[in-house]
Image (cartoon, rainbow, N blue to C red; front, side):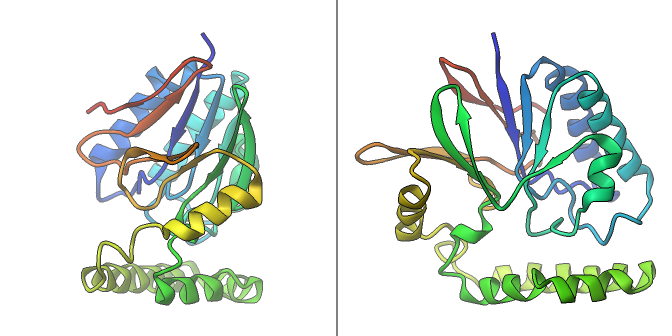
Amino acid sequence: MKKTYFIADLHLSENRPHLTRLFTDFMRQKAPQAEKLYILGDLFDFWIGDDERSPLIELVRHHIRQLTDNGIPCYFIHGNRDFLLGENFARSCGLQLLPEYQRIDLYGTPTLICHGDTLCTDDRAYQQYRRKVHQQWRQRLFLCLPLKVRLKIAQKIRAKSQADKKQKSEQIMDVTPDFVLQIFDRFHVRQLIHGHTHRQNIHKIEPHFTRIVLGDWGETASVLEVSAHDLHFINEN
C-alpha cells in the first residue's frame, strides 16, 4: 500500500543525541517504505549556511541521499530555524526545496502544506522579525560573515527567542483561526498540514475543513502517515 510521510520540528542538534537516534531510526526503518517524504521545516535546530560542516550534518545528508538514491522523493519546506538551508545542501542529497506554501494532490485530496509560522499572525513581533530575516540582502550579508561569527549570532538569536516565548501567551503562539480560513479559501483546499506550533492534533473545522498539526520530536518521534484510505500519527521512541 502506498503511503506518504510528513515530519517537522525535529530540531536536530549536536546537544540532543536522542533526537538524532530517533531520526536515524525513522530513516532506516520507516522512510524506505514511503512513496514520498515531506519535511515541513525545522529539521535542524538552526542552520547558519551550507558551508557549515559537522558529523550531524553529514549524517543527515547521508540518510536523505540514501533515500533519494533509492527513488523516494524527499521534499523540504523551510522552517523558522533552518530557513537558510540552501540549494548546495539540497543538491548534495537530492532534497527538493519547496516554497513556503505548496499545494499537493494527496491521494485525491487537494492539500496545502507549510511550516506553519506564517499562520501565527497574532504574534506580530515574530512576524515583523520574520519579514526582516527573509529579506534577501540581509541573508546575503549574513552568509558573507565568517562561520564563527554566524554561529555566535545564531546562538544569541536562539537564546532571545527562547526568552521571548516565556513571555508570550499560548494563544499568540498558536495559529490565527481567521487567517487559516483565509488560507483555505486562497488555495482552494480543504486539508492543511503544518508544523511549527508543536501541538500534534487533527482539527476538524466545520463544515468541511481539516487542519493537521505535526508534533515536535522530543521523547518520541512525531510522524504523520497518509495513505489513500487513512491518516494517522506514529509516535515511537
